[in-house]
Length: 366
Figure 1: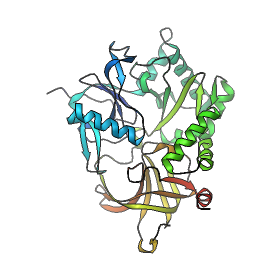
Figure 2 (figure 1 turned 120 degrees about the vertical axis):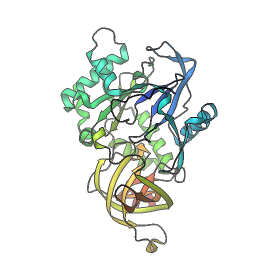
Figure 3 (figure 1 turned 90 degrees about the horizontal axis):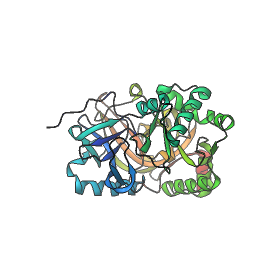
Figure 4 (figure 1 turned 60 degrees about the vertical axis):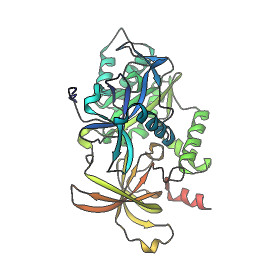
């Protein structure tokens, strides 16, 4: 049996690793079974554009898109070539790809890769130089410590091309909370970084509309609220947020979810600390079920759990919102309590799920 890899810290969303057949895998979420890692198998060996500067091997991308359809296609493809990677999650009641520890050959940490780039002075390529400048800007003007940043995507495993995006990680709930308001400082300090173009903003709004079942007039408003959507010269810039290991709210397997039905709920956000993470969590209070036969419900609904990042990151403590998603019963084994949540990003509700401010929900009904 292969030697189990020793991790430097708990696995976090958008870490990467290379399996023992040299495939490049992207970690999903901040909680995992103890003996494997939930993931997407993103690249396989093949004659295409991506070449690892670390190993010299050439890769083809096998993940078609990050949509539910794309991830399901990835699952169906990989289970044919690596059946042992198919994993049924009792916690979620669905199938994932999850690579056993003994199949992980090398693990990539975004924060370590960024430190390599920051400390290097002479051998950086054009994209790496941009990453270094961005890190220095965020450190100087937004006061984010270098150790709370990382670089993910193809730059992480040294497979970037000239057309690669910059996928930049921010670790820590406190930094994610006010990042959205502060980021426009960078536009003034460094004009090469600009807000996303109107054409790209429109396409993003259309994408949100398809995922949520919303008209473009409403989804456009929410795109505008993510003030950090930007480009760096001719390079698309993505900012991704993750809790630190110390901020992970629960471990895999401590809770079990049972789906019930799709509902609309009016509620108030009581805690948005994890509102930018993947999955996102909003704790909620003062819930009022708006769906039909609501008089039959008297349930302790305490949180929103979202696997659809495009629908989160907009809300703060005290906001009154309407959420449409899949109602689930939560069995919290660690604390020996049962309660309810609304989950977003499921096949059951795909194309008809959202979190909206009350005034926008009213517009949707009018």
